[in-house]
Length: 252
Image (cartoon, rainbow, N blue to C red; front, side):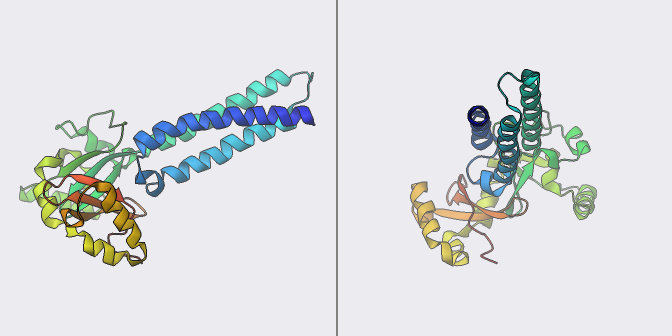
């Protein structure tokens, strides 16, 4: 029994070390900062770890018998299956990673790599639809609605069908081109504080970390799937200062 326990603990240590290595690019690049917890990165990672890191060592404890015929094959098989499961989980995380944060009209939209219909990437000639999509963290861009009436109608109909302009990279522009509109549509932090009365300390901490005065900051909502987040910007420049889990619409 002692040999089995030692083998299981060694396997657990190796699995935990590999999981830690996988966590680094996941947190610092694919799902940075608040996006890890509120854009699905944490839940997917914990699911992978709970299955991959725990089942492998447990199975090793069951099959490990010193001197057993075929033990090496058993351990190689367990390790191979575990590696394949981990690779599949990382692939899922990679495919669902945030690639763009798009300012549209009066809000930001978080777009994941697998959100785009294939044809929308294919017809984007401005470079934003080019593959591979960003993999070192989401890029900040804007989206400008078309001025041609027919295109406007096409976008409206497409939006009704679930593919809105933030999923059409052919309309993307550098964020600098829409900063003025972002500043115009933004709201003072006083409203963010009012809508998150139970989290006033978090608003104070956010202001302190920004190195600015509260009146120098404003915010806009960001739709990020199941959750709405707040994008805090510089009131003068429109530069993004922070993405926060504070609710832009208030606690529901």
